[in-house]
Image 1 (cartoon, rainbow, N blue to C red):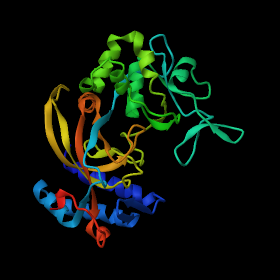
Image 2: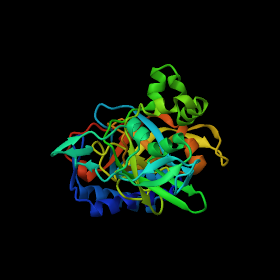
Image 3: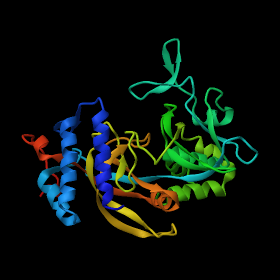
Image 4: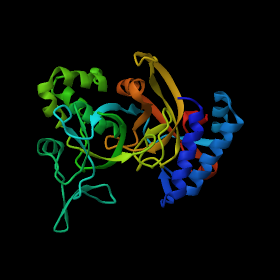
Length: 348
């Protein structure tokens, strides 16, 4: 979560805007052209270089930007995600028998995000998770085989992974498509059925429950009908904008609510994790983040998923991060001029 990540994150947004065909965005009462958004990111970079201290930088941001909250939204749910690392195999064995699929040949994804199979010109739902797990998919290539269904599910939830292949070598896999079925939180279902208390629900707690109740794994996982398909990837984890994710700076949001690549100011709490990966409490968080990613569970203006990085330490932090927070979008004052805006407390 170093400050140098701010510059890399801003440049990632600029790279996306330079090749994007989308030319306009709307945020509440503000209409923004892609050029205005790019100009704002360039201004942010200049301010960062002129003001190396955090206090001076924040003061400069207050002068040059309007901090906007989504209209009528005072609180958001802030969670975390990461890129896990698990053992896997390039071939199926008695130990490695749970597949990570590539994109099926018959999967169709429409521009509006709907996905399924085309039958006589009509889109029909693709099989849900339970059916795919039970019958397999003859139309999809298997990229790798995993030894644990819970670990495979974690890869689905996180959207990417580093796989340590049996026999040597590694493979990186990244999100490529989904079956179009609705996402449902298995944590919420565990609470609804009395298996867990709401305050207990974290990713580590869910994993522990499944490890302790192996006979329930299939039933629990099948409650989430959404299924993710992957592609082989190179280099660091990348978000839905096609740019590398910056730990502590890149965030997944609803791309219909927030301009892609936009800078945001996040006020919440974050885990403090020791070097050995153990949790050592929580600390207040006030930081600049960037809209670099999306997710099937991230819907509406009141959700933000913060990318925590790779490995055990990041996994611990992401697994327990679930706090209320406030999200402010930074809009250049030039783009906001003349608008009847309700300014946030950050501008006062």
